[in-house]
Image 1: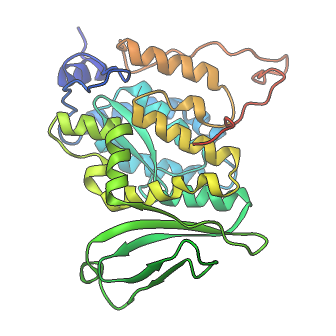
Image 2 (image 1 turned 135 degrees about the vertical axis):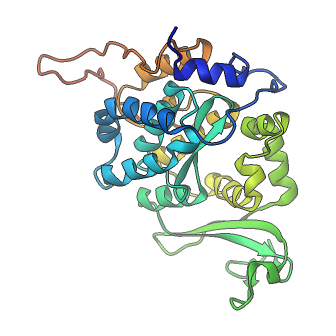
Image 3 (image 1 turned 90 degrees about the vertical axis):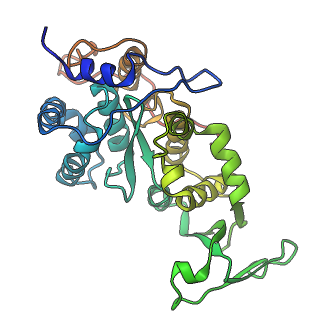
Amino acid sequence: MTETLMSRVLAATGGGHPAPEQDTVPAVEPPVGEATPAQVDAVQAYLDKHGDKFQASLPKHVPYEAFQAAVAALLPKVAGCTPASLRMALLTCARFGLVPDGYEAAIQVQGSKAVFIPTYKGYVRLMYRSGLVASVHCGLVHENDEWEVRPSAPAPDDFTLKIRPDLSDEDRGKALFAYAFVRMTDGSRSQVVFVNRTKAAELRDEWSYGYKLAEQNGRRDSFWHRDFDHMMLKSALKALFPWVPTSAELVALAEAEDAGERGDVQIVHAPRTEAEALAAEAEQAHSAAEGSQETAPLPVKRSKQGRAYRGKKQRGGRKGGA
């Protein structure tokens, strides 16, 4: 019997998919180390077959070549994931117009699955893209910085921060908390929100499936493990949502990330095109092992001109808070 990528992944992970609805995360050992050149080539060939879908999903302002180059660079670390989960993670990333280069977004390995993770810079990118805010301000306050918070004072005296640019992060001391605020197009300023280390750890422990999985399998390689300060900063940006105008795309990005943190399907939250068909395919990949590297496409209704038919309603991000 020919060994497939799926059979190798199942052998490495104990043969099953962790159930996201469980309170405790089962002990699953992710693939160890980087994939072999043969694995990388096989997965690259699989993704190349779906290149037209990635290209169609990217907004016009994002070059397909840049997206391709980022995917090629990360394949050695993610080629051991199930092909369907990798395709879903990359399609989700593409539909938000982000590049999985570690700057705007990344692909995280969770057990045998690939998960799309936007960085805080990805959130900032979509805030500017919405056209609803003039500028975004976020950062970390360290032990040796000079700062003051006076909630009852009018802006900008309610929060003041003085730092020394000549000092390194190490000299500035440990990061105490993250802050975030925006300036509106009319010149006004939003409320300033703060997330300290304790609050960030509470959010991590309650919501992050990737963190729990990395704790249980002993690898401790989730983004919470590798860059807690980055995640604290991103938590502050997301906590800002109730206080600023947010686009449907930005809300959908937060919902997609939250779905990934829960171990759920992310593509249903991504804007544009064929979400239902891709969601069904992703759900199937969650509950059943694939028999080969190729995933059979689901039928899509088409018009006489050959275009995909979406029905009367436009497909877009969900409304509501994050």
